Length: 426
Image (tube, rainbow, N blue to C red; front, side, top):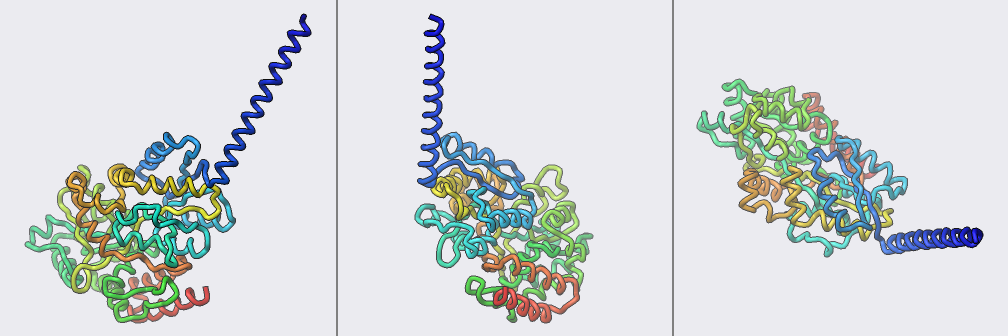
């Protein structure tokens, strides 16, 4: 009888093993079927999530998509390092990252290299977005990514100081120069600053000056160099003359976003060009300028100027085996509900147009109408398959002009020559 019990146990174990094997095979088969259908678990890669809101957004997706869960990978905060790590994987053909949260300026480069997959424009609510942001996601006449977060530069100003002098915030470069030269020193302040250290921020500041003057750095999606113009010289001279005349302090040549924010927030500047993220920081109860400042669109030569569009786009790795799931995730992240969370939890400017006129949001974020104007008037950074090289050339040449090592005229001529080498010789 014992042998019968033993045999029964053997048969039971065998049945369990066969069942487990069948279950495993079924799961493998299901996974293979999902992969053939372009579906399955994903990885989203991004720069550092400084407000830690993304995990909550993705948790909402994961709860309703158990077979298509997404894992978040955060890279270092510095944009140059983020790009370098993404490019290393993309060049090797790695499918490790399915969805990439990329700087808007990288879209053209990544698309031209074949690293990101073209997308079906009808799949996403592009007509509900602020129009300029859509242009950052296209290259070669096709949608290559989907706008996720936007950004535009604002002119922050000390409202208390201008009010005391009976002055209004400047709308033109001449007004900015006059106030920065006269009112600022009378109140013990420096006049104006932006982000003038030679890094991506300087490319942005320089492009804003050139665009505001009516010029362009590149045309034809990076195929034509257009920077050598009177407008570019006028734009660069505005910045270089500011340093030479002293209403832009030499310390600003060492400023990135945070250094410039701290200078303004600690009460050292009358005017600052910076992104919307600093509004809430400068309004905090501990801020020396809380309740004492305002924000307006950037000035230009003869009226409001043109900001450069910042922000990020969501793109799909061309080597991803789960591209249909990735497209669905992007649709979720660019829905109105999530875009509202981008603003309220992430403190980042959303791409949905209606959110900028929502009465409840405007009460909480009073800069939204101003930011909307700035985004609508903004231009993308130069589109180029070699954007990284273009930006490095702009930074180096413009910095030499700001440091008074070359005149604006000499700098623009040199920049045109260097960009021709980048565009036509790589």
